[in-house]
Image 1: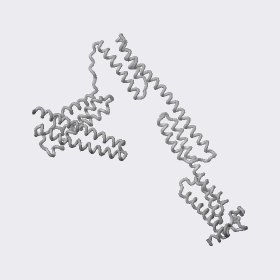
Image 2: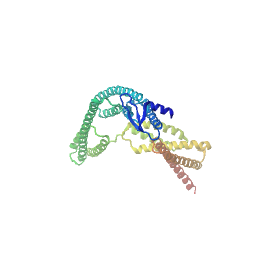
Image 3: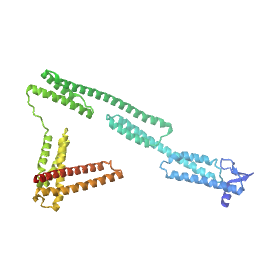
Image 4: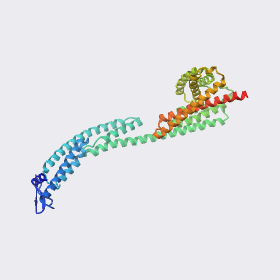
Length: 428
């Protein structure tokens, strides 16, 4: 306390029950408080308050030193300096004020440097916007402008004297682009609507040809409608597909009537790719009952599966029934091959045993595997629900795959039991 009092007396004094801060620099003497108990206690109190003010200055400089955006502390610095000029404390305020003055100069210089840098960046971004909006790919241009906007928002302010001009130019370019974009898509939608209406009209005209008696005139008209259909521009794929199915149906009905009237026997054309897929399916279905050769059939199914994926990628209208048949026979072969491989460890001479005994062995093993996999799947689903991963794509895919495998095991199990029941019934 003694040191604090001595220091306080150097910068202030007491008079008539009041405490005064001595004049310093251009700032006059001023009253800062009253003496409550003793003059020394009053001086010590205001000396401690000066230490608090000093700590505030130190804290501010620490914050500025650690900050990335140092310029944002200018307002806080100015306010602290203003507060110091009226602060009720006893000490040497001049070094604090001088230090704040120097820091203000440094911050203003830094802000000016950053503003010049920000101006260069924003001008470059404006030029980039001008280049982007000169294109013709509206989706790509929109994405580019969104990317530029992120950069713009991350860039700090420029000098206030030109801030509005810079912002207005950037906003004007963006506003003009989005107005033109809206006009473009409005016109595009209008054209698409017109095309859809014309395609619908063509479909109606094609259906109407079924009722006309002039078969030759109708033939010429359907050909004309086909040519017009090809000349109409693109419409959304889903709508295009819906209208095409209707138009094709109208064409099929007409040509069925036309061929019948003209005595033409038309053999349906089969896509060679679909024909190959049908043959692969039939080959595997035919090979499946040959139990001793299931391992070889399984290898063939793997090769066919690779080829199927290649053909499916090249085929537009693949019959879902055929695709389901192929997937089922592949699953059946793979599950049967796995069953026989497991059974062969205990019964290496399975094929040499009577069929009834084979069935009993396969039923026991398949029943065990189906129940085991079902229990494991239930546990996996429970864990996935608990962990919150049940909706993840990979988890969902695994669950669906396991469900399919279990379902095929149960189908084979039912077939084995049916065959065994037939043996038992015949014996009776």
